[in-house]
Amino acid sequence: MREHKVEISREKCIGCGMCQRDCPAYNIVVENKKAAVKTQSCIMCGHCVAVCPKAAVSMTGFDDPPIEIDKPTVLDPIQFLESIRTRRTIRQYKDKSIDLDVIAQIIEAGRLTPSGGNAQDVSYIVLREGIERYEKIAVRFAKRLLPMVKLVSPTAKNAVIDEHFFFKKAPVAIVVVANDKINAALAASNMELMAEAHGLGVLY
Ligand SMILES: Cc1cc2nc3c(=O)[nH]c(=O)nc-3n(C[C@H](O)[C@H](O)[C@H](O)COP(=O)(O)O)c2cc1C
Ligand code: SF4
Ligand code: SF4
Image (tube, rainbow, N blue to C red; front, side):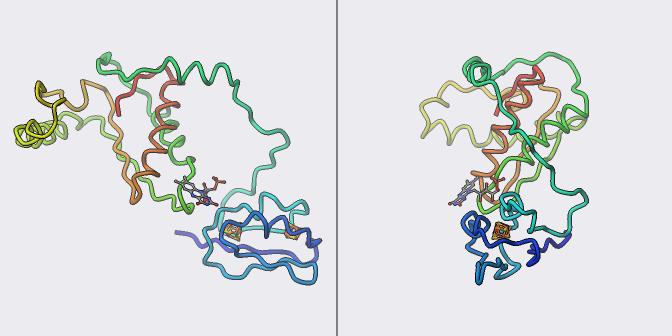
């Protein structure tokens, strides 16, 4: 992984304190009207770069320069709420393949989702060609567990595990893996919205 370093230009800094107030790691100090970074082991969130009105803060180690946003992107609130209201979990799928660039965009929606402490600890495993093989293994395991689950879960009492129990003949499954399951769940939620935007159904 490439190293990122936060740098503050003393020439450009006017000592306004915006970066200090916004830093979640309390990693910036302003003394004598000049800001300075305390350590380089912060959460590397880039907020100091984003809020500085004088472009005095920069972070090394990125291929692309920071994006200038002159107008914040806004979602249409009515349309957005309507898409959340009308989404449903889909358990029956069409026999249709999904373009790789659509899958990449869905994963990008997960990758860009915020994570606690900016951990960015979420990984994605895409199952396509081998999907039946993985489902077979999972089904075998679930069948062994079912008698025990039936003892403790009333909803599992009538459950039937067939060969498509997990993926329901969906053309793609994406396994979302993270150290912190909250980060994984947040990423998956945005991924679902992106899939919906592509007209695709989703089952968690
Ligand atoms: C589950 C979760 C917990 C978070 N907890 C805090 C928090 O306690 N304090 C805080 O200042 N920021 C918190 N954040 C914000 C993250 O630090 C922030 O999302 C991350 O640094 C990336 O920055 P961004 O959201 O501006 O892209 C949290 C974010 C998530 C997703
Ligand atoms: S990158 Fe984030 S945590 Fe690090 S100094 Fe800047 S604002 Fe603070
Ligand atoms: S936000 Fe920019 S100008 Fe203001 S104190 Fe921080 S580095 Fe200096």
